[in-house]
Amino acid sequence: MNIKNILSLVITLLIVASCSTKQEFDILILNGNVYDGSGRDPIQVDIGIIDDEIQKVGNLLKHKAKRIIDATGFAVTPGFIDMHAHLDPILELSDCESHIRQGVTTSLGGPDGSSPWPLGQFLDSLDQIGVGMNVAYLVGHNTIRENVIALENRAPTEKELQQMKDQVLLSMEEGAYGISTGLKYLPGAFSKVEEVISLSKIASAEGGIYTSHLREEGLGIFSAIDEAITISKEAEIPVVLTHHKVIGKPMWGKSTKTLAMVDSARALGLNIMLDQYPYNASHTGISVLIPSWARAGGNNAFKERILDKKLRDSIKAGIIYNILNDRGGSDLARIQFAKVKWMPELEGKTLKYWCEERGLEPSLENGADLVIEAQKNGGASCIYHAMDEKDVERIMQHPQTMIASDGRLTKLGDGHPHPRAYGTFPRVLGHYVREKSTLSLSQAIYKMTKLPATNLGLIDRGLIQEKMRADIVIFDPATVIDKSTFQKPHQYPEGIHYVIINGKISIDNGEFKKLKAGYVLRKNQ
Image (tube, rainbow, N blue to C red):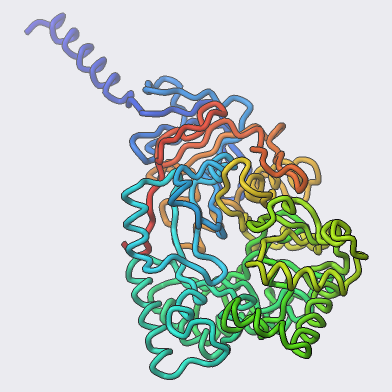
């Protein structure tokens, strides 16, 4: 072979080699400001995705892809992880649109002590129908307790406690990420700390976490946090004080002490975390205003008690106390109806309005009577405007606070939901980052991505780096904002242009795609 032929062959081989290094991706994201989730400042870098993985991060301008997204001027971040989501309607709303439109790619269900049962069977059903976003679940203490001893106000027997422990273990083996409690709700309110510790030890042995709706979030919050810290210590389990808040006017400003308690516990080596939604109003059933003892045995037992004048007077006094010092915010106008099946025209209206509509003076006594009537009719969900904005911002700034919606999967036009169901994550990015500078953008993204991923043990999510799952959000930091309000909640946010879930584009240039690209996540499986 002559020199000319040899040179020609070398040149051909070099060209082939050069071409072979130009990988073709399924999706290329170019020119974006990438916040990798670690809390570091952004860098302008490209991202190449193949199947459900981030395959390459770097200068990829010369590479080819089936789909190219120009992210010039946009923030590119890991998908948001919602540490507290009410996924109850997921069998009907399996596309998860209200969450995905916020940039949420993974949600943790089963909060506040309530979860599907049997969990493994339920997760299998989700696998069959498909889900829009990734979902993981906790096993609920209230669910387990009710399975074994219904709504009885007593401690379990030794045999019953073993049954409860067996059910927790089964759920953990079926993929639960830990255990949740709702110690403010029935039947968790009837449990002693020793019971909760025993069950938490089972979850801990399987590598799970403990999330707690505390026994009290108002006047009794300090002892409630102390109880959670005790559970962390005795069960050797990471604890999340979920939707952390201080509620009721007498407690406004007391977040300084609750956060100091967290810091003190962490200094002793305990893994105490928090999550929070960015609003100064909460959302739960109207029964939260009623003393727990009055609801033991269920609604029929409650109806019998209110027929006894002495018991009714005691129940009413307890409701008035809670309106003054707890969820009621000392004002009937701060209690807003959200979902009222037996009187839908009340949805969006206040307890004060209902009094006036009945021709009653909007007094605490009349308000308490209507609360009893509402519970008698089957209950209602309400929004309680009883928190202080300064506490909201102080809790948000704590280094161990994760962002979480506490929102329910929601269909446009259904009821009068809390705006967190539509706006939690865009509200942080738009209102608290851009408008108020409560957090930097890097801090906020860390609280939505890497921090929750670490606490859940999701080793392949929460960061933008090679070999991680391709869960990615692309938004405009200059325009991203929540639109849902307490008056008009059914509004999607603005400024989120793309949401990629497991390598599939679920929000494409602002348009929602019903792809069901999510995975059902099972711990240790």
